Picture 1 (spheres, rainbow, N blue to C red):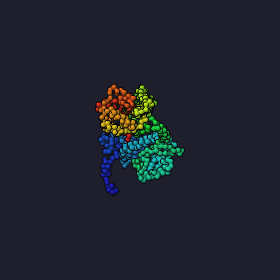
Picture 2 (cartoon, helix red, strand yellow; picture 1 turned 120 degrees about the vertical axis):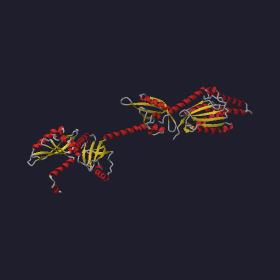
Picture 3 (cartoon, rainbow, N blue to C red; picture 1 turned 45 degrees about the vertical axis):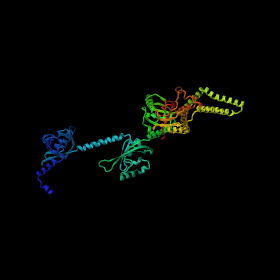
Picture 4 (cartoon, rainbow, N blue to C red; picture 1 turned 180 degrees about the vertical axis):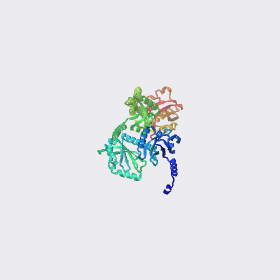
Length: 618
């Protein structure tokens, strides 16, 4: 091959070089001693953006960036003066016809004739625009990275795959008390307590071997050691960095001191536990609301009473929770609106319990103000006053009964006086005459004494407060118990008793024995009035109540007697005490209900009784 090259003529060699120059990416130009173009290669034409004829004869300095032109000319002229100098190497910026800027690295050599006279200058340039841009970006990136590390509040530590610290932020000194220079080059285990310090290199080896780790790309709590050996609580986040061109990754860890935060959190948690214990052990019902009425919290007492869980009520509007009857919801909503304006709201209402009981509640809404004086929270409190209300009802019933007894004292006295008088007369008769009429007198005496005893017994029963033993019951069970009790009497009297109970009729919470006796009393009244048919019916009435009716086809109740039907000792029955219906009313009212005389669809007497409904226990 060398031999073939030696046989090439100068012309052939020149042509071969020109063909190479024509397809090469590098720039080739030929200029004279004044730097005027004598030849421009195709690649140079592409960069300069001018046609060959536009370049030839023009100074190469015209195409140099204005900021680099003077510097390039001075270097070029100095090189020309060094006649024995080697190639001229220089880097500058060239500007194309379109204004594009290219960075070129030039190599210029002299071409002389055999006598040493300068013929031309041959220039070779390589486009290094991309390399310089990357280098500048790298310098800029590194500068930004160093500035970022200097400004990081959290300590940042970068290690290689062997655990050796490569770089750190300035903030390591604040956190660890080490200067950056003390840490760079050290094994990162210097920051770790035992047993992690001894095992850290094994962790890294296991990761290199298996690719498995528990710490990458997540935030974990950890303890590290300061320079003085004091442990501190930190949050650490570690990520892997794959460096282009490197076979080994780096690992970057961000350390945040959470010692004070953890101490504050523990203190806060302890405080919240104490407050929660008081909150949940509070006997009365307590909650916490937003000003719009959204439930934020409720104590265990109110949750237990309603049979609901914490998540069942939190986030709900307070008036839509399970505690309230439908008829109370609007009142609660209006109370919240008033409290949200800063008003203290208080009223009595009722709440349903999980076993269907209805509790009387002394309810209040207190606005809690924030630092700016605006309402920040609402504090609902409910005090169970059911026993107080029951006592008040019993007291009222007793006072009413005693008042009724007082009003009817003359009648009672008359009822007592006549039997006593008769007893006295009978005794005198017995004393004056002893003969065949003795038994008749004594029988009459016994009868009168029995009536006296019955009157006194019913009077005491009416005046004594009731002690209710509440239990949930179906109204059908109470009807059937009363009918069963009077079945022999109904058969003898030829009385037919039927029942009509609505399918959706709720259960009621009552003293079963007392309410069953109540229906026995009303059934017996119908039979004694001469009724042949009695209807017992029940249905769901106004929200939260059950309506029971006792209707018969007897002679009915004269309008003139309706107003006094439930007054004690008022009766139109021979031998009656006048306390039966009074006891019926007392029993119903003690249960929180009411009773009244109503028009009867069967044509006789009609009684309507309303009892509070009970929600079936789950």
